[in-house]
Image (cartoon, rainbow, N blue to C red):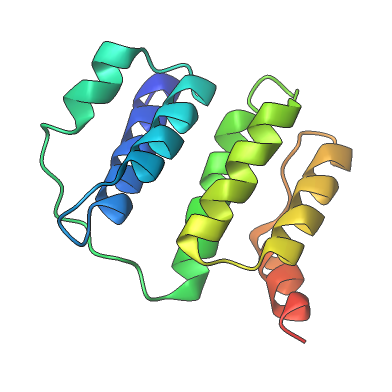
Length: 133
């Protein structure tokens, strides 16, 4: 799957999370639109995602939510450059998903210093586990 399609799929998941209660308020829409801009998805493509229909339910398994956050972080750093607005969007996404913000900050810092901006899944999960205590 190409990177653009992966970004659209991730955004589609985010739309599903935001609309799981059957509603989407302006604040949620603005956040999703900011995320779409950050992922370089044009407005028309963004709006089309709302018509695709989503069946995703809120993920209760924290490790799956953590991996979803990590996917976004990797996508936003594909060019090996994480801008301030990107980091802000990732943090907002993490809050929206209900993952630990302190762990998110540690993961982003670790990714920034990693040679290919990626860390192992074991390291990712360890950071989140350590942040619980």
